[in-house]
Image (cartoon, rainbow, N blue to C red; front, side, top):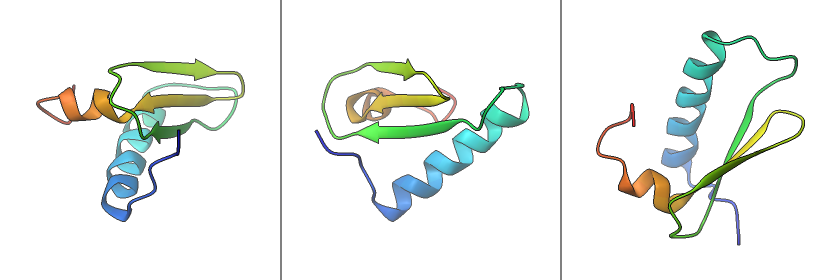
Length: 65
């Protein structure tokens, strides 16, 4: 699996990450990545890394989802 790095997607992801970080206190920077896979899932890893599958973002009807 590869990490999605398209410009439009990265801009949307950075916007979402900034909104999440503004309302939470994390002991380290939040780093969100999107994996190119149709699965509707996500998971978190140590060190502030969150991985979303592309299928999850495609299944959302709104940015808030």
